[in-house]
Length: 289
Image 1 (cartoon, rainbow, N blue to C red):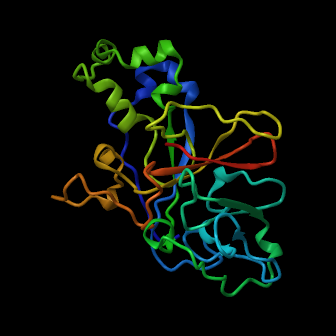
Image 2: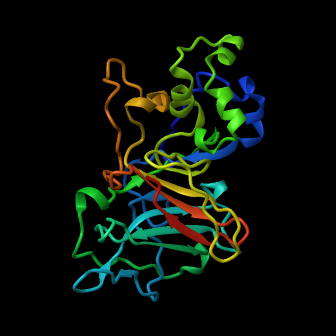
């Protein structure tokens, strides 16, 4: 944790303009991965995992001639990420995936492990290397994190119809003293006021090519909530208002996508990991297009 990132205030206090949004606000933690040299004792993206030497490594056995070792994607300590809310006495979340796409839908097999860091007294020195990998897409570069808590609101498609129509109405914005073009309210809300781009914990899902779809726990039927968002970039051309102060460079073109982990998550640009709040943090992976 040797860097700081600060998200600029939102251009509009949307909760004040539309008070019905206030109860829907959720905390999120932007992880802000940046290239570094994390150790097994650090929260990281693409860094080494605190993995017990006596515990077998995780392998993918789907569609390979031989079992393919999985690679570390994220390691997150609860001490650094309070929103993790790990189950039981665990305090460490570890996420691995198979670094190659699988037919028929180009999916990425993912494994999730909750563990108690103090129980690992003899850590694995070097995990096995995958033999089948698309390094450009799915081998994250080691990154340290600079967690920052923000507030998010739902995707427009997840809002009640009446509230959704209010946000799309330019007259209501103008009545609050905010000048917007007729086509701008929805885009402004989606790009700058609702949910942040990039890697994050908690918050709301950032939907794109598909309409919002509820996720329910297969064990108890409870509605799932976002746990970890894995993204291809920290920002894009339409989300530059989220660029941290520390990353703003005078004269830099606004169409540069900042991608410190060095991965591209399919064409969806993000992979969403959900968790059940009523089932001990039981994880469930789901691709958000």
